[in-house]
Image (cartoon, rainbow, N blue to C red; front, side, top):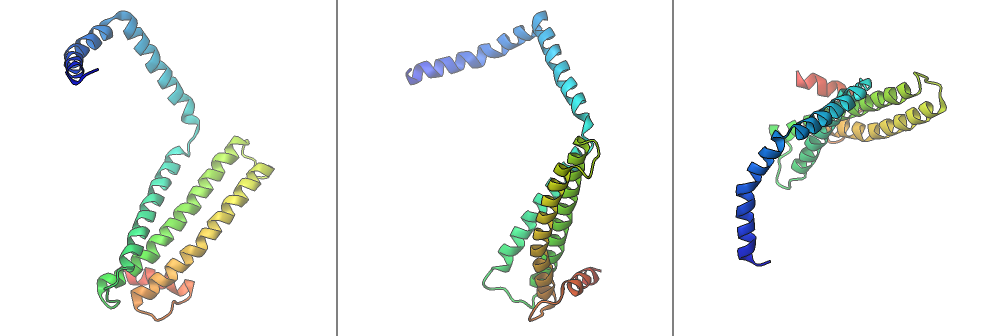
Length: 182
């Protein structure tokens, strides 16, 4: 097909297609098909209302994505070669690093808990079912493993914030981050 024929076909479709679609939608049979399709979609949505945790998981996934984006930006800013550790903006990055890592860990722990509740609900609210215990144990292990990285971010974030030569303990760092924020 040459370019002239393509252009002519394109022009014809742009002009004729809206009228053709309008005429098709005006047919009673088409309206009945659309109504059946809408009813099927609504029925499927109504059938999925048995998951009360869905919106919570969506919120936590969005929050975790936001936290990870902030963490990536902070690490990128901290790796800049010509920054002065005594500038307030640089020190602020330490506070953001520590606090957003803490939020990310809490979000991960909450998501794991909600996911366990969803899984437990499928097994008729049985915590002692072996599949629920296995799933919960795996998620707990992953949350604790992520907590190690969060502890480093909190400790080193507080050290950057306060211009320490080496990081303080986790408890002192958490207390210091919260205390210096207010």
